Amino acid sequence: MTDLSATFAGWIKPRSASPLDRLVLFSWHNELLLICACMLLSFLVAGFWYPYWRVADMDFFVVYNAFLLNTPLPQEFFDHFGYLSILLLSYWLRALHSVGLVHVDAFSAVPPLSDAAGFADAWTQATRAGRVLSLIYAIAFVVAFSYLLRALVRDWRVAVLGGFMLAFSGGMAMQMRMLRTELLSAGLFMIALLMLMVAATRGPRAWRPLVVGCGSLLITLALLNKVQVLFLIGALPVLLIFIGPNLRAAAKAEPAQNFWNVQSRAWQTFAISVLIAALAAYAVKDIVLAGLTTPTAPGLYFTARPHVAEIYWALILAWIGLGMVAYWILWRVPALEALSAMLAAAAGCMIGLLALDARYNVANVVAVFHPLEHMAVFAGWANPQLANGSFLDVEHLKFLVQAAAGVLARVTFVLHPSTRPAIFVQWFVIVGTVVAIRKREWRLVLPVAALMLSAWAIDTLDMGRGLKQEYFNLTDPLVIIAAALLLANLTPLQNHRWTYAVGVALIAVHAVMSQIEPVKRLLRHDRPEVICDFYAYAARVERFPTCPKPSP
Image (cartoon, rainbow, N blue to C red; front, top):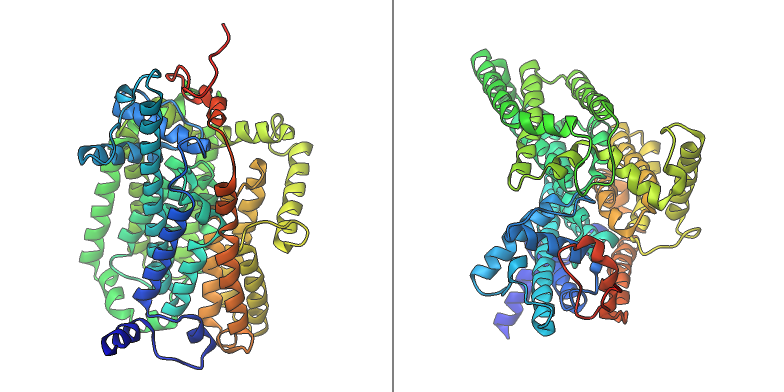
């Protein structure tokens, strides 16, 4: 009995009168273990055991194309773009096949249609393996997000609450049990964003250009998998411009500043940055030229207009460069550190593009270099008013007004209810921002406002596809970061008499609302014929055993 008590005593931290302490029952590591265990339990209850046809969009597309890569045959699916999800799943299936956990890892090994049971078993095993891989992505995303959030706000209690809100956000709760491209892309981008924010708060450091380069690499990989990441990339200067060194970092910054003030070291680092960027540019030049000069490719739904992509990519690069220069001036970054960081950002981007060479397909290259054309086609299918005309014509402006009104209605929740628990975190951020404004905490208000305005703007653009639940992972983390910044830096919010009650309510809302869609999916009574609508995405499958034969 004494040993059992000692075990639980190690799990539960000492009691405190602080409302924030009362919300976090266990220690840092045990809280993270509990969050991951709850994610696993939810995954096993609803998700893992689904048959392969239950979530045909996109489980089926990704598994089919992973089978093709392992045959080897060319990839056929480029819609999202999905490149990393398909590539990594192909490697994952190979690894599981090598240890006997998956019997079929290539399309050439799929049993014939005459063996209906074997055919279905091959697809089901591969799909469930893909779902396990999605769970791994989700848990890695939550753990990395929590650790980096802790480094940013310097309060582990706030960080673990942020990790819980992410783990049980509406988008994460669904995507960790299916093969959606948004999960991997959002994870890569948000980890990169937090890395850059943490580096910014530390002040001048010898290693900051390396962090910028790694962040750029992760963001580029995110774009290779999901086209909407372009919106987040465009928001980067706004998201980072107001994140500067905090007072504690400034007090410890002198030794690191000396690194950049010693000309021999600074110039050596700058020279290394130039060399790496030049080598990366040389290695990736063929990919860039192919992407910008090829207007379309088999499997794509658009034909690009001449020089349009060159123009908007030049504008995006100029916007990112202007943001870095503005940060350099505003926060007085040493010149050689700033220049090294710019070169590292360019090198990271180009190294990320080299991932396209792992299984080179010109359609992937063209898709990545023409994201606006890609999104315009799919937005036009969802909203015919967006199909034609310039970006600034009356119909497009009308859509933006309607989309903004739709996002506002969703924020109220009353006018447009949804199963997105992060809406209530947005309410907390709005109240916290008002408190920060009244206290004139402008260094806190500005980054929080940038995070929230970026989230709402991206949600508005994603209304072009109806702001589907899977898009929540692209903006909910921004809201959670904003809430964490407010809670960690505003003592009145930590000690307010309503803090505990509001915290319990938010935890309960996330725990319950995040499971509504998985439970609804569990209770659905779809039949295998649902897969019959997706032959267009599997040209090499003559038909599925449960589908009727096509008429002659």
